[in-house]
Length: 125
Image (tube, rainbow, N blue to C red; front, side, top):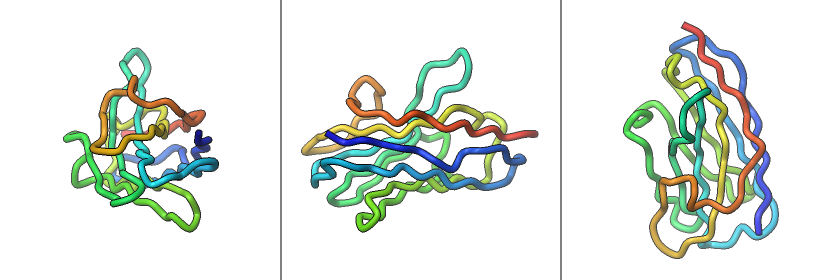
């Protein structure tokens, strides 16, 4: 299994940037998939982006394409979420999550077995 700890949230003005980190410990094997999700008050948890540990293929929700970038540093066992051109509608608690999958990547939160504690991102207008 894997343990996840997020960091890097905060308050930023619209148009600004933030970088979130997700430090993984435990079994970071080649079939690990790490995803970022977010949940705003009163809304369902939604997929933001994900990355496969072995081939670093990435996937993005349409709402963040061109603004957010996910990356992985295998030496540090850390996945990053660089968020640029932030909008007020990006305000949410952001979670990193992980599952073990040999092929592809799932975008529904129910597919993920391991979760971090979440970090608040607030974008002011």
